[in-house]
Amino acid sequence: MNKQIYLDNAATTPVDKRVTKAMFEWQENNFGNPSSPHRHRQASKIKLEEVRDDVAASLGCLSKEIVFTSGGTESNNKAIIGACLANREKGNHLIVSAVEHPSVLATADYLEKTGFEISYLKPDETGLISMADLEAKVQPNTILLSMMYVNNETGVIFPIEKAGNFCKEKNIIFHCDAVQAFGKMDIDVNMLNADLFSFSAHKIYGPKGVGGLFVRDGIALEPISFGGGQEANKRAGTENLVGIIGLHKALELMQNRHEECQDISDLRNKLERKLGEQIPCCVINAKDVERSPYISNISFPGLDNQSLLLKMDLAGLSASVGSACSSGSIKQSHVLQAMGLEDAIINSAIRFSLGRFTRAEDIDAAIEIIAGLTTF
Image (tube, rainbow, N blue to C red; front, side, top):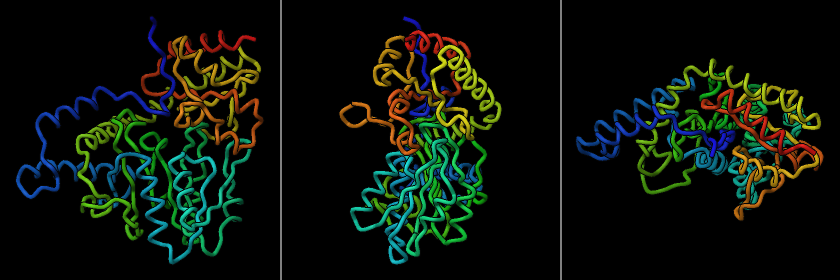
């Protein structure tokens, strides 16, 4: 059997062997708990704080503003629930974009059940969020805005800097889910005026189960986990130090991101161009706005994406569609629905996401597979 082509990097990336090596070397020689009182903790505590310093430097913030977590979902939960509970006396209204990751949308649903009011920002047909819509939805009791940096389904880059400036003027806490942007884009949380900023390791060739949250100094968070004073009392539980070391190495390897980004952009453009030539009816969703080069969302009207996805997998190509429910069946993409696209576009959409290990020959083979499966 030929090698399975992997174009689902937005779901997770393969762990870089250099990351695995760094994690193994640490685990082999160290085991101390950073919170223990004896000398076995010392190396672990020093290493933990060294990594915190480097992650903070990459985001342009203070070391004390970095909280390590189990990943993007925990970071999003902790940021939104923690900030809303801690600031409830100031108001009970929050604004969320309608195309957020399920970990944000489900958190908003939870808060609504506890008495908070939620307003949702819907994108236009290009996938962009309107600043005018944001301004219109602000109320006197608005305490928080949550807007992702890069959409995980379309790759659309949202107007984060404008949103941050607006929130600062209105004294609204600004949370940004940056899981698809962290390590891949130049980021300065102060220039973005972000107050809370979620990130994860496994989107940048690091391990699963580790990530972090930037919490601007002075932003109050109600704890949602209990039983320990780790992470400056912001996140209870022994730190996953070997995972944090993996995150550190993965971030270090992203220093060449500009060159990598250009290479991936060339491959993404080739994929879209060649498919457009061979399958004239295909539609590149959100093609007319600024997008991450790592993600391409393409519809094949007249075909069912669930069936097409299965056929591609059997033919040797791994890709994905929208969010899957617990039963494993595929729902319509809430992102494409919010954009107001036709059912024929939504129901035939496939997400192809590229990464560091995607090669030109992979794209050539993928084009051949897709073209062969979409011939009417």
